[in-house]
Length: 182
Image (tube, rainbow, N blue to C red; front, side, top):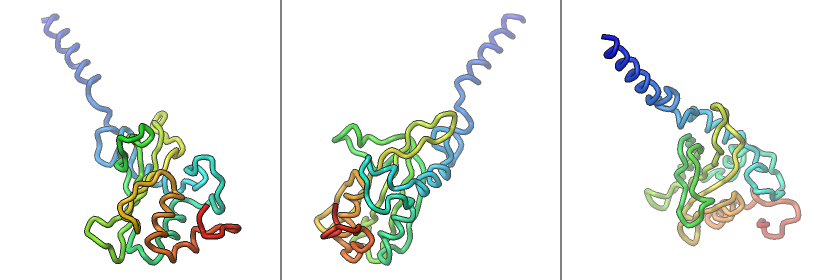
């Protein structure tokens, strides 16, 4: 009797230890972080945080403000989601992504094809005790004037966007720019 009780207790303990953390296994969470928290953090991230040490004008705007201004009249909607990174590639280890990302997909008013959905993504480092660290990277993808492009910075994404929608140059232009590009 004692042996079977001991075996049950050990088995139960191992089962509990091997069970996933409830926050990690629940829908709407990515490895312990609520997807809505990923989206909220990305939306309020200042552009300066994802500009890789470059100092561009108006870089104190939030990512959400910038994206709304950039997409302007071309966007029907901007849809946000949190979860693992999806704008990744294997060409560069820096583009491998993270388990914690927020993505914004731009629904265009006049898409060229069914798959014509520009998207941006913000990478976050591993959270500490469920708390997000600041965003550290930006990735984007869109059908630009010269074809499908993958961008590693917001300025590259702006260039792709303005190649297709030239009227958006007024939003990206900084004082001192001759042609709207840095």
